[in-house]
Length: 342
Image (cartoon, rainbow, N blue to C red; front, side, top):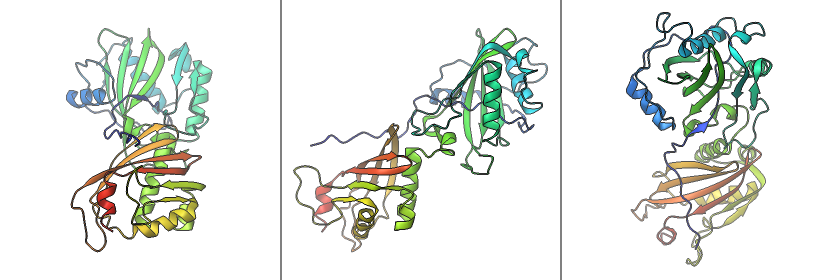
């Protein structure tokens, strides 16, 4: 028998997901004092190990003109007022400045603007590319924290990922920005985000496997048709809900293998035998650029009311290529008990 894959319910590994401050339109909201305990928890969650004595609102008297924190604060101020230009950047960044605008590892198709930029010319190229795509009017600089004894500065920022055309996630995302300062100039920038939020900004431009899976579940709840399934499933889609090896033959066509959108719609008719009111999605984890594991739980119950009375968990593996699901495999938690309901 095949081993059932493991789904990570609450991912907490660190992923680089840079989204530095962008459109210079004066939209940075006033910074506010942030509780040390909350910031410490945020940093721990995303894997940054640091001891922060304070994380407070920057002010004109808070830092000397040459302090790393003041240098970083000047970057945000410049971005929000005049914007970055070929004239002001040489005084703000080093000649070898590195800005790594890399995709999340779980984004299948990475937009072209996600790459590493260097120096003044690279910085201006990045600014032009991102300003053409993203609307960061919701951006807020929440707080700033110089790391004692280092030339590193952490900034907590938040924003609602939104495209210039208006497409948005509608949910505020929090990041920690890490700046490296040499003398009175910035030499590098990185950003960190929770694993659960990794890829959400890129996914506004290119759908990720996880976002396709989420959309498929949302549509399943409403009901599939040939029209609404076509954008989500490939023509050669394979749905494999066959019983585990060595199990008794299925008593319902719900357990079987189906191909294409026509097969998906046929399988959906057999779903109608069940009462899915107890259905829950327990967790999902992208395990590769094209694969997502999902754990669901439910109490096997027929529309007639017959039930096992016991909650079980299934593990599903979705394969997504080119923005569409191409395969779906299920490992049932208790096939025998559910099959005996028929």
